[in-house]
Length: 377
Ligand SMILES: Nc1nc2c(ncn2[C@@H]2O[C@H](COP(=O)(O)OP(=O)(O)O)[C@@H](O)[C@H]2O)c(=O)[nH]1
Ligand SMILES: [Mg+2]
Ligand SMILES: [Zn+2]
Image 1 (spheres, rainbow, N blue to C red):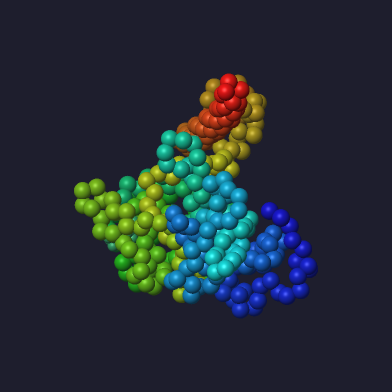
Image 2: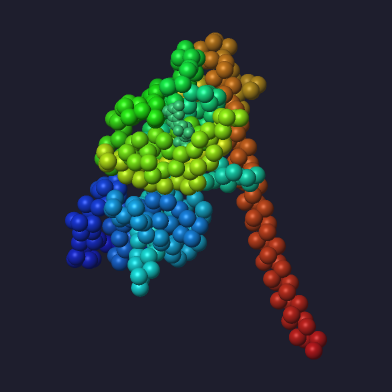
């Protein structure tokens, strides 16, 4: 990104009216400083509300959320994770009535996951969040490892995780849930909600302050869109009846989109994720298993795998029973998954480079070939 001297232009880059609109979307002084420093003088700030195949829907104030502007990305091709994602702040330029995005402002946070498919590629789920609502529901298989994956992703991105257990109106065994929460081993706020009742989400109110950005993630059918509707006090988001055969919702939500609640909070609903594959989340693993991570600091080898290495601090702690065996296993599994993904990503990069190299060679060959033909004539 190019640097710009804010003193070089005398007129204010952002008018008070503009700023009022931006503040409704979560704008702040730090963002403004970045914008003034990094964006070219003929641009203005906007936030990405949703991503379409044809471009990016951006907004400059809350009212625009109902009729966002479709903008295309200008200039050089960006790496997929550097492309604008929902929640991003961007610099917008309008040339002859055509809006374009020239820059993506530095992200305060980016929730990454492994993109579906066999290649090891990253996908940016949402950006610039204060909270991640990890939603699950009674009647759904309350799964510790699924919860942990979201937690790892959230902690790695420095987004405060909040666990929401929805459909609390359904028959459930509270002791079982408490045991599961206890197994998480770290302090994470947990809230029980019923999205079908007006007072059923009161516990979430403290998070819904003006300018706060949050996203709802979790499996399909747990009630994310119903919760979002209640927070937004609308019924604009489509929700789905659950199929009785497998208790999974239909995929009614097809894209991630940003809305503004009457409280002033910015809410991003997301389609159900079958799987949250870890990506670049070692820091998140360390935060979810702090006592285990601390024990590895005593490992003799820097690249210790904590399985049978001599001088392993973690194995020693296991022997002393200062560390829980089950948590140790889950920690190892998370690290293994990250290592596998990294290996896959390295392989894809290698393949891509090889293909590019072959492409170059082919071009050379055809060029030589055509020259020879020319000589033959
Ligand atoms: N019993 C009960 N059903 C709910 C609750 N919240 C949502 N539902 C129902 O669960 C189904 C799936 O909801 P939806 O919001 O589409 O889930 P999403 O896929 O996570 O967005 C719908 O039929 C909702 O009416 C709740 O708190 N209790
Ligand atoms: Mg939905
Ligand atoms: Zn070790």
